[in-house]
Length: 78
Image (tube, rainbow, N blue to C red; front, side, top):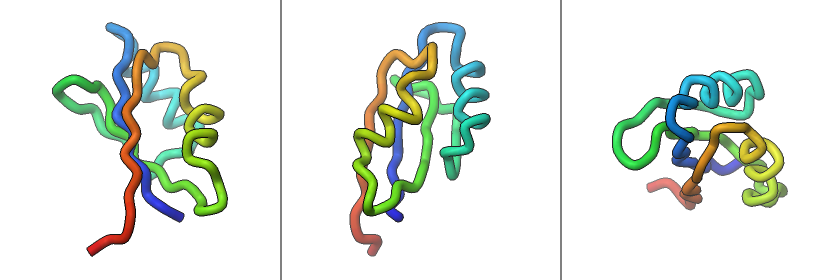
């Protein structure tokens, strides 16, 4: 399993609803409300056998209210 971080920008007024939908899907390890250009920061673990882009497309990007995402892949921890 590898940790993946996803910054999520929501359409105005939808952050809480988007966060609730993510929580209901139980795909996250951690989920935070953030300040700055993104509204939410999602940490999840994706199996090494899974394609990260496909996993995010199928499990996250169909949530109504998500305007934009930015995904950060992680590598070996130091």
